[in-house]
Image (cartoon, rainbow, N blue to C red):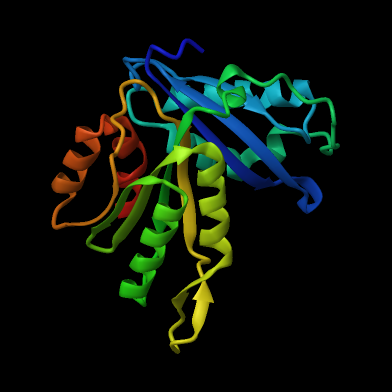
Length: 240
């Protein structure tokens, strides 16, 4: 996709398909400048599906997208394919080693990447915050840990490999405590978006922890960083 127009989101999701096979779907959404009144361009890759199956998935996503024209839809489409993948790929999924050609976006490993995470809760807040700050500094990641009401978001920018490393730490370390005060791993975390930092995005100079009293304040933080689309696509659904 031409990088200059609009925004590209890469989303990877594991979807239960037939016979409880897990399918890793790599979805690339390119949102044109006048999205959502124009449909996104979508590309679908998966090592476990044939090219024909990937095309089927893409066609079905585009059909579904038409129903949501003029409202932010990436989030809806991801939920829809998680529910409906098993009906879209009728034949049992077989593992294919034929690597589908990597798109340009995937081959630029050296680019700066951005990750948006949603945490369900923090019981041991002070300790948790310290841990996140330490990881961010060790991995030279910049961004924000954002609190707004019950919403906790972590927005990170940095080398793609360091962002991957961060995710591993976040999922495997005992970062919080459970209701009885025992140390526990983070199970309630969701990756809302992982994407290459685009020219219109501002780079964060450091990692900061911030509290916002209104959604409006939070939105302004995203807008100041050139991330208005990211905000409107992923944050409002969390309030439901």
